[in-house]
Figure 1 (spheres, helix red, strand yellow):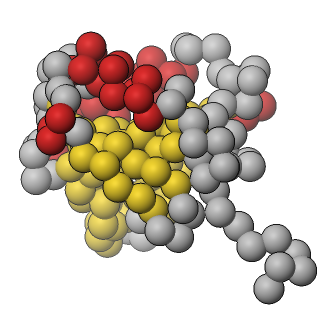
Figure 2 (cartoon, rainbow, N blue to C red; figure 1 turned 180 degrees about the vertical axis):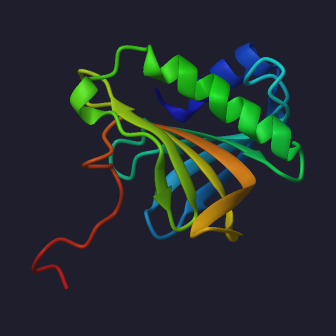
Length: 166
């Protein structure tokens, strides 16, 4: 989808247009961005920021990101959204050999990662800060829940310096 097609979809899906749709650029990746704030991305999930990323060369939609954060949602809401989405993704038909879940990362927990038959990736990450909970266990204080859909996570359409160009 082009930027214009995504703008039309945003207006149709969320009733947002004009200045309610932010436009920008990721300077390092040289990708285009459209960003909105929406209340109804996930039913009863609370307000979220939705970002649409457009490829460096193709100028087509390559990724959609949804972010619920602690400033606009409670910790309980972030955890509930993570649980609801993880349950949905576990039964959504992702290629079993690509599915990962429950992995501790430096900045949170990988709740789900999987790819469909076409190689499109879905990543659900509960971000936050770990604290020592005793008995060599760590507890996560969530600060955000990020959901990413990528057309080609292994070879994204972003600017890269090719061998011999520099």
